[in-house]
Length: 277
Image (cartoon, rainbow, N blue to C red; front, side, top):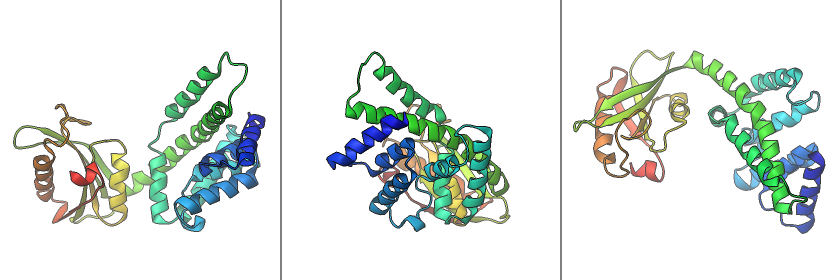
């Protein structure tokens, strides 16, 4: 597989049609060329995000993989131990926003990457050769499964450990609107704060990653509340986008304002549909 990745990425560079810089970096990671992996990943960060030193979280899982691979076989007990040790030493030194972004990695599912790799395996069976595009997709699915298959469980275990000491999570709240509709809420508070605080509310019709989203508010000194509209997550109702957002938003704010942990101040944020609602 490394030899195939090396051939694929060499063809990409030779044609001058690089396209997705991060994918080029990942191909070099699979090929075992750590210097070019770092160059292309740094280039991706600079072009799309900003200075590398200010954004250490971007593909941190791939950088850790490359670092630990120098001294241990990926997937081995030694590799997993060293990977976790590197994460534990590196994570506390990262800027707050980078730590928050890393939290979302723990929400991802290894099975999703396994399925994508299996799809590529299925597509390639029975073929005598692969096109450049097919070979690239096959290599990327393989290295992503390898990297995230290792990273996600380790990140999740570490994030759960530090979260247990900091956050008080209530993710099974179901409130009733005046017309009987059910609205699912996730509330996250800082365990170390005893008195009432200001609240940051976000309406999330997409659900998923609600706890991590609420933790971001807590990290900035607020209580985080994520509301999923009726018909999503714990709500048994039917989903009707745009239909009940206004009145349900009022019901959620009314409920929050009556909680002993709320100091009466509440802010909302969101983009696209989350901004509308």
